[in-house]
Amino acid sequence: MFKIKFNISIYLTIFFLSIVGCENKCESLRNTTIQTNGATVSLDDSQDTRKPLTAHNKGSDASPYNTNLPPNGTTGSPNATQGAGQPLIVLLHGLGSDASCFDILKGNLEKAYPTAKIVALKSVEGDKTFLHSIKDQADLSFEELKTLLTCPEHGVNSPILLMGHSQGGLRACAIAARNEGLDIKGIVTIASPWEGGPSVMHDPTLKPILDGFSQALFIFSPDHSIPNLLKALTDSKNQPGVKDLIPGSQFLTEISKNLHKPGIPIRAIGGTSSTNMEIPDLGLDLNLNPDTILTNLIVDSNDPEQRHDMVVPLSSQLASNISKDNKNFKCVVIQDAPHDACLVEFCSPGTKAILEHPQMFEAIKEFIDRELPETTQKRVDTKK
Image 1 (cartoon, rainbow, N blue to C red):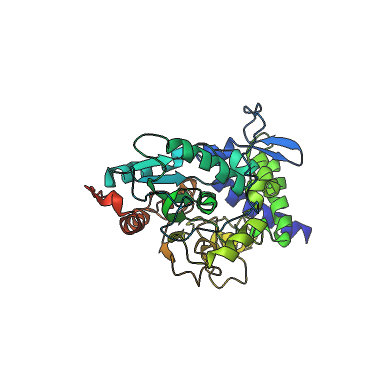
Image 2 (cartoon, one colour; image 1 turned 90 degrees about the vertical axis):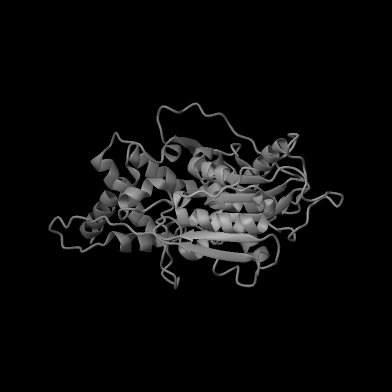
């Protein structure tokens, strides 16, 4: 029995080696330093001089997981005049990433909406997305946004649209929940785990397989950073920024409680994808299908929607179980749109990552035109 399990682990390891082992992709994640159980694990041995991080924490918040969204068209300041200042479209990146992931999208938005200011926030990059809870990340991002609003062309009454990829979408909701004088017109979430990340994060029955990955990787390449990467990612579920993404977490529970209330308009864009990879038989006749393996690791077996974007279940991206009563919550599904650019090479030819997908951009434009009409003045349409 042990021999069969070990062989399966090797098979799965070969598959995941090809996904996470590419030398020139997903650099922001590979270069992340994560603290686990009091020790620091560096995904890049050359980066071992990280300084401790601190987060701004508002003592006035009734709950550290406050996610109540203000009603549509309201601000936290009763004397605020809406519509003043240059429109702002604020981009928030995902776990382990940074502002550069939005380079293509930001450029397209700037061409399409020359009257708006497009800003990718940088206050919570890399390891901060692991080490801080999403609420604390939102506090840091909010302070950066407030500083931006002190510019003469903006002002506190500038109409704002928040747009976040993956974890960044939940960060956007936490920013909006602060409701401190910002005129937030809408929120766009792109492949965000509203109901939690992949099953492997919370299903204990998958832990032996994950342990097999790490052991087999070490056998194949003991001096490579990949075994450290997988082990760090496994252990990182205890880090605040990742713990919040586990299904049933306190943060996601608060999201679930409040999302059914009508408030700021939200457009949830979800992606689906599959791999065209094949696992060699090697004479063991195990008949393992990469898509089946991915689905089992990502999507709960009881989920009627078995699609995913190779990282997050589609039902979670669309908040399928918690948004049914919210008339201001609308969904769009983009086919052949993997979660991250580093996964594209393992998909069918012509596949584009969701942040670079033309259908995703069209869905964003439709939402912006309706919810942030100030940006449509002298707008220039672009084609990718």
